[in-house]
Image 1 (tube, rainbow, N blue to C red):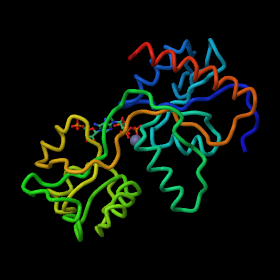
Image 2: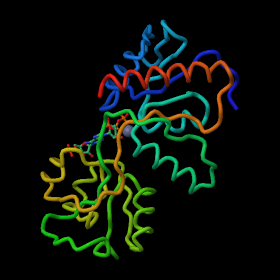
Image 3: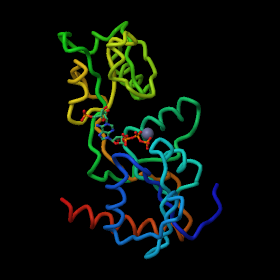
Length: 226
Ligand code: PRT
Ligand code: ZN
């Protein structure tokens, strides 16, 4: 366990889709920061709540290791990381504390436009490219479908055209990327948005107090936004 700290540390995305909305949501909770020169760490001025700016994929692990106390991350990343940790025997250590109402998207199975979709059983024996093997495997098992998962770290949408896979499982928001690649979404595996992630275990009293204050302000800020 991490040593007791009297400040709260929140990991957010350094750059990308969730970076600005995460920061402005936290700012609307009355937080402000002094930025360090490397722009990786922001020291909290109004409250002892600091920010660490990182890759979104690193956020669940930073919470698991106690390097950060809380994080703002997509439910897709949080859930996938939790499944991967579970598959390698790790006990659950982080969970979704609250959904934050931005970064909405869905993890969907998409197939070539030319397919006439009849249902999940159509994927049986097929190769599906994804960066979310845990979530895809869980869904395939629930459907009772045996398919091959092709793990790709990016550019998943071009895999069918390259002959690497027959179908894909990827994040979709407007659907424009799928359409541009002659693919269509046919099944939703996960509805996602940005969430506040935190540990399952309790904080020490000082950080518990800070987290409670932050949660109260967050409720207020999110209510005003509605
Ligand atoms: O550098 P770092 O690792 O931190 O960033 P990243 O490139 O991994 O993440 P980023 O910024 O692209 O996404 C961060 C989070 O935003 C994701 O984990 C999701 O929770 C959320 N999000 C919301 C999305 C989208 N919408 C989205 N549309 N993440 C990715 N996309 C992709 C989608 O897969 C497609 O390829 O954007 C493309 C455009 O989408 P369409 O459907 O509008 O065409
Ligand atoms: Zn990422």
